[in-house]
Length: 428
Ligand SMILES: NC(=O)c1ccc[n+]([C@@H]2O[C@H](COP(=O)([O-])OP(=O)(O)OC[C@H]3O[C@@H](n4cnc5c(N)ncnc54)[C@H](O)[C@@H]3O)[C@@H](O)[C@H]2O)c1
Image (cartoon, rainbow, N blue to C red):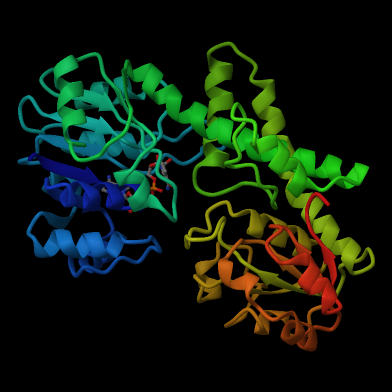
């Protein structure tokens, strides 16, 4: 078993640390956020992620998992340090490597001789070299090991991944990093750093493409009178296409797809290729936010000024509390800009202060029913399962008009229509 340091305890770092401790390694996780480190040391996980708190508590109680403030306090005895820090988007669409560079600079002189630094953050092609340059240590090997976990099922995805990708020119370092995953069964791809870095961007870009494609098909279905649910069924049965990630919705978002697709467009551009396909995928997504807002506007007769809209769901998908680049917020922004008042409920959002700036006019309801109070239209923007089970009779009794725009095709249309609702979904 190895001594590991994890730099950054967000969705990726905390999951990585807790899961490696679960696999038997000795793990020290570092973050800059003093309060977060104190809470984690007490076994409290503040993000919504299935089984994560359980594994954190298991790691702490079995003495294999510690939390410290500052990367420099984590790496002194480590054999392998994982960089799991943010790589946000810069104004020009490229990835901001400043967190990677700062963390690398902080640990440069402290990494033990012959140790390994692994880049788990999503970074542009060539970033392995950037870390090598900042470290300035010929005895420390830098390895790329991109992470593919999904928020909402992060622990499951880490312990049962579709694949493990290692990018490194040095065979023994690659084997060492791969050996840390002993106990995890998955196909492995061992390749050069540039290919490993490209795999991560290509995967996210392809998934975003699938979603934009199905939203475009849904728009065609609406035009020609087809039902997108049946179209998807027929489409997804083709094993070359597959049925995963073929669900129309309000558009894609989250902390990764938007920044990673834009970054790949810029990476391609810098490499001399005009990635028009991906530009189109991004444009279709922006359009989808507006298409949903337009459906809401149509549902109230074409003018949102002074209208009350009830909203179910704020996070970018169900199963997470992450609001970063949430399509629900993008749609709400369009609704409020057109003059609507929004009353919203999400099971993981407790205070307006949790919303990003610019959403302070949103009235946050304490439950799904009270979000409908006085609303002229209800919009389902996140696919939380609990919304499926709300009683349309109770909802209708609270609303000014029984109208629903189901941007996730989540509700049982026949049931809601039976109870007097005007129902508008996506793609039928
Ligand atoms: N969130 C996902 O679903 C996901 C999935 C795969 C890959 N990724 C990639 O993984 C990386 C991290 O993403 P995330 O969602 O976990 O980020 P996050 O914002 O949730 O967490 C990052 C953490 O790093 C800490 N940090 C920043 N600089 C630090 C430093 N110098 N020392 C110690 N801690 C530091 C921050 O305080 C924060 O707690 C990004 O590159 C992202 O694109 C994310």
